[in-house]
Length: 387
Image 1 (tube, rainbow, N blue to C red):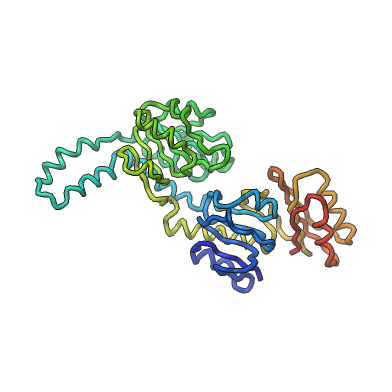
Image 2: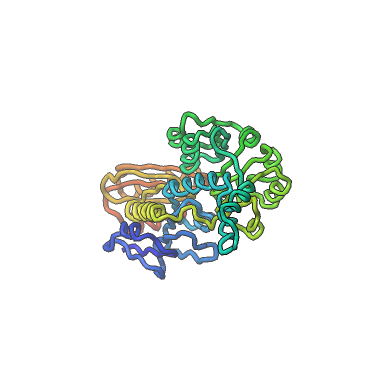
């Protein structure tokens, strides 16, 4: 029986994937084997030795201490693409609403309620202040072509926009899904200088924090409009405000409000609504639960942000799972221990991700109780499980 702790409300459809005869799911589970989380921060939380995995029901994992998890052999999963439809729709909605100043126009119109005025005349007189450009024929730069970025780019093509895409690390799957009408740019400056609208769809990493800085804003087309429905930290706020104040940017539309952004006529903020749809919450919960279940029961790793992707069908016998540092000689050391134990390896796979690696093998024979101890005693081995 595996104990799964939930730190946020998780959609029932996801919890239903964790069968009651194999999993015990509760909010305050002691010594949990796994954690299901959405937005709760784990940076100050103690990570017990029992903890094998954390699954984030969403794409971003900035609320999880990845380095600490890797050191303890805790696999961290996320759910890329599960909320892509919701975020892409919100981005396209903001693109239209922001360009046409719809939220400001609505707020102004609501301000006339109860006033003794000729509403029709006020509307005709006041609407001029909310004039905004059409999207058709304009250039949109999509920075980051993952699941969300690809959907935004394809949708913008259907709106009649000329779409430019930039992502030096685009995956094969994303490339296959991207419309042939999207112009692939090999350098960022080309996108910044050409486009009337720019939209960010990048993860926050040490390399992308403050990705759009003063230099980037200086390279943008005069009067461009920027959308950020990825993460607020991607934009240097001081440089952003300066670009808005001097007219370099005509508008900023974001899902990540700050005090400095609120109340500005050239900024449209939403309260982090990107994944706030019933469909998205259910998709993320189901995907996160499935990832945990497959890892806990079968040792397979899919969609981990700190460990390599490793999956294989069972070949009989018991499954040995070894998380270890990505250093020479460890695979040989692992197989030597299993051979000395009299086990026959039926199937084996090894993959690495940066400085971490994962070796998984199916073996037949008599398993002695000290096998795990012998494998765990190998230098640079972080965690061993026998399933």
